[in-house]
Image (cartoon, rainbow, N blue to C red; front, side, top):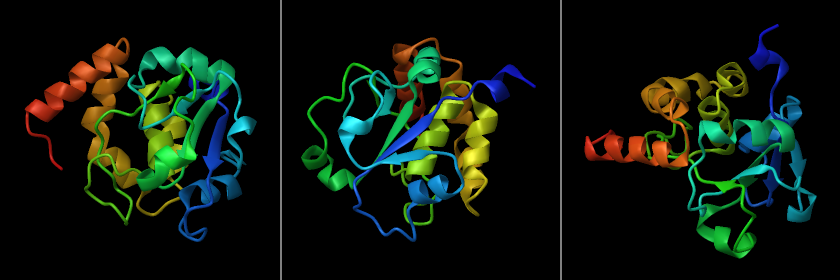
Length: 180
């Protein structure tokens, strides 16, 4: 068994109950046993890496060990109302994802409009858990398209040393006129 297969972060999703349960990628991930859903922020593991679009620090491969030891958290809530749902700070381990393009049917082709499964898969991929990232996406018809749309971005981000490196790569992509 490879190191990657034996070491995968525990994944948690804070679910704000703001979406259609039939279309919710987080709930489907739960049904397949990939994530643990929590409905209160105080139920999230302390010190976990939290995917938070309001964070000023980008997720990077440097977050791998923290995610392995404390877990990885996604926030499943309406981004239009995120400031109402979340406290001003979710701790020092909040991380935003860099520039990526959505493949989900609702936001296909739009930059930064990722579903929960896309966000989790991107985070896993960037931190070096490529096979688990692809496994999460595999339960959605459109899932593998996310990796193919973003492979260049994801591969580059996964080679960065730290958050600053990810931001430099993102800036280079944006300056070069990436697709949107």
